[in-house]
Amino acid sequence: MIRNTRRGIHDAKRRRVYYEIAEHKKRLLMAGVSKEMILGLLRCCRTHDCQG
Image (tube, rainbow, N blue to C red):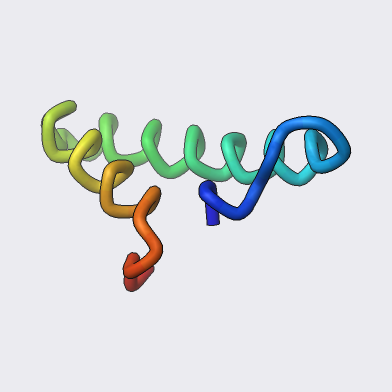
């Protein structure tokens, strides 16, 4: 989803995607997940073959 959002005309969509990611990241940090694992999840989400 992140890869499909480009700068320029699609800035609102891009901000919405990053806001959703920030909410998810905050929830994971509060649950005690390490930052390395969260970064790994975000790395997965940036690829085309992400499952969720």
